[in-house]
Image (cartoon, rainbow, N blue to C red; front, side, top):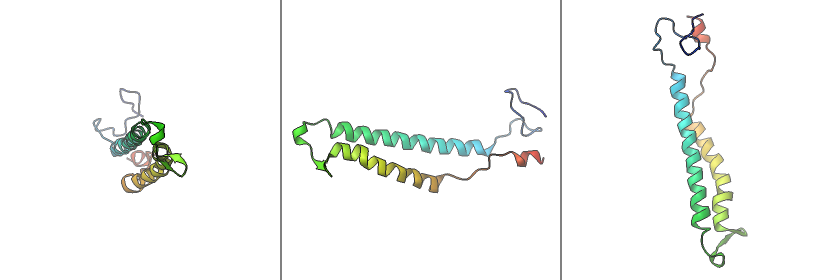
Length: 105
């Protein structure tokens, strides 16, 4: 078994410049995840400090909660799992993590 200069196993013995497509897929999915986290953070900050920065006497209430708290905490808890589910269904792909195809060659 041959190892590359980083200590990992060479998957393609003839061509050391082999690029595994699984890394491109994983990078794309990681960027989607980072985008969702940033969206959630911006959403939370916008409502928590945008609506919550006013005088308490001017607050509006939704279901007995201040509007800033409802939108930043309650609505985001409902919205973010829905967005994650949509992202997984539309953009994520099932990738085999084993190297069986490389062991056959």
